[in-house]
Length: 411
Image 1: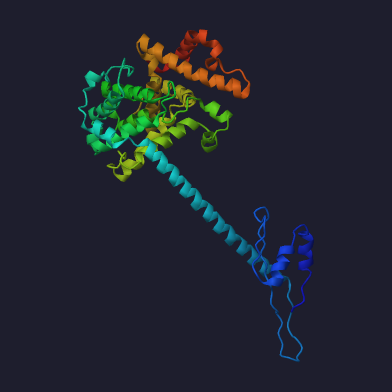
Image 2 (image 1 turned 120 degrees about the vertical axis):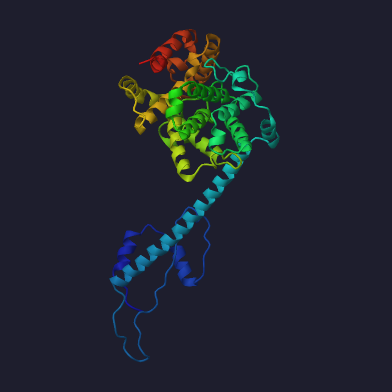
C-alpha cells in the first residue's frame, strides 16, 4: 500500500473531536453498522483505499505513493457523496411537505365547499330583482336578510352587471363560488364577517351601477376584479388587527411580513377561485386571466387602511388636477380608493345602521384589547380599550372626521 502523506495527520488534528470508533468497526468488519442514537450524531461513511503501487512477485514496487492530489480527489468525492445524500434527504422532505400541503388543501376545500343540496337550492331559486333586494340603494343593510337572501343578492349583482354573460360563467359554478366565499368568513367574528363582505360588495355594485362615467370608462375586467375583490376582501378574518398578528408573531406575520391579513385574504380568494366547481374565471382567455388576478390582488391589499393613508394624498391631488383614464396608475389609484370607500361605507348609512355597525366594530376591537391586556400586560390603544367604552361616540366622530370624510367629500 502506498505511504500515506501528512494529510491524514493534519485532518485528524483538525477533527480530533470526532469519534471514529464506529468508522473503525465498519472498516474492520466490512459490514454496515446500525448505531443507536444516530439521529443525534452526524452520519459516518467509511472509504477504504486499495494499493496504488503494483509490482510482480519478487520485484520492487515502482511509481509514486499516495500524494496530496489523491487526498483532494478523495475529499472531492466525499463532498459529492455528501451532497448526493443531502439532496435525497431534501427531496424526501419536500415530498413530505407537498403531501402534507395537499392533505391540508383537500381538507380546506372540503370545508369551504357548500353541500350539493345547498348549491342546488340556490341554483334553482328565483333570484329577486335588485329593486326588491334594495341593493341599488346606498342605504342598503343586510341586517334583515336571511342567509339565503344574502347569497341571492350576490348572484343578482353579478347578473345585473352582465358579468355572467360577458365572462361565460357557468351559473352553477357562480352559485357554488358565492356559497364557498360565504363559508370562508368566520361566523364568530363580530364585524369582519360575511355580512361585512356582502355590504362592501353591495356598495361597489351601487357605485358602479349609479355612475355612468365608471361604466363607460372601466373595462369589463376591472368591474369583475372589483366585485370579486370586495366580496372576498376580508376572507377568513380573525377579528384582530395586523399589528396584533405581528406582535404575537403569528404564522401569518412570518409568511407575509406586511399587510398580513390582506395578503391572506387574497390567498384565500385565489384558493376558492381555483377550487373545483368554483372556478368562475375558467371562461377567461389566458391574457385576461393574467390581467385580472393582479387587479384583484391590488384591490384587496388596498383595503389595508395603512395603504390607504399612504396613497390618499396622491388621490386627493389627482381629484384636483383631473383624472386621465389612459393612465394605468390613475386607474389603479381610483380602484384602490373605491375599495376603501366601499369598505368603510357603514359610516354613510342611516343612523340606526351606522350605530349598530359601530357597536359591532367596538365589540371586536375591545375583544382584541382584552387579549392584549392579558397576554402582554399593556394598555391597549384607545379604540381597543374597553375602559374607553363611554368615549365610543367621541372616538367614532374622530374616525369619521380623520379617516372617512376626506375620502367622500367632493374635490
